[in-house]
Length: 285
Image (cartoon, rainbow, N blue to C red; front, side, top):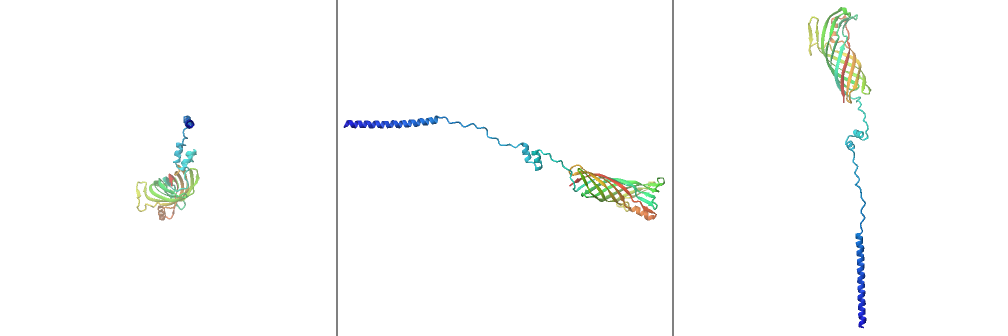
C-alpha cells in the first residue's frame, strides 16, 4: 500500500514538472517571437523632395497690380496706348499780338476826289475767350500814320500831317471750326469796336495838337468795324494750341470826319478799310 502511494506521488510530481516545463517553453517561444519582431528592421519611408514652391508673381506684374487700370493693362499685355489726341470742342482762353492797318478813311469831294486821307498802322496785344462757336476779345494797341490833304492825284498832294494814337478794341466774332486732326480751321464774322483813348497830330511846321487820355475829343477817332476772315488753330498738346487769324474789314465814319463834313456840306466821308493779323495761343479747360 505504501509502495502504491509513493508511486502515485512520484507520478503526480512528474506530471507537475512536465506542466511547468511546457509553460516555460511557451513563454520562451513568445519572447523569441517578440524579439524577432523587434529585431526586424522597419521599412524606411520613401524620400520626399522639397515642398513645391509657392508661385511668385513677377515684379512687373506686382508693379502693374498697383497701377491704375489704364496703365495696368498696358504693362500686363504689352499693349501700346494710343497717343493723346488734341482736345477738341472745349472752352479756352488765350492771347497774343496783333497788327492792324487802315488803308483809307478821310474825306472826299462830292465828285469822289480825295480831300483828306487818314491811313494808320499799329500793333498791340489782345486777350480772348473762345466759346467754340464764338470768340470774345479785348486788346490794346498804338500806332500812327501820315495824313495828307490834297486831290486824288499824287502830284497835287498837300502838306502831310503826322498822326500818332492809342486805342482799345473789343468785340465778338461768330466762328465755326472744322477739325482735321491736330489742326482746326474756322471762318470768322463779327464786329470790333475801336475806341481811341489818345492821339496827337503834328503839322508840317512842327506845331502839335495833343489829345491826351481822358481829355475832351480824345475819342474823336473811335469807330466801329465790321470784319470777316478766318483762323487756324494748331494743337501743341492735349490742352494747348497756337492760333493765327487774318481779318479784313470796313469801319464806320468817326466823329472827326463827321465834324469836318458839318463845316462844308460839299464834303463826304471816305470810310476806312483794312487788315488785321494776329498770332497767339490758347489753353483749353
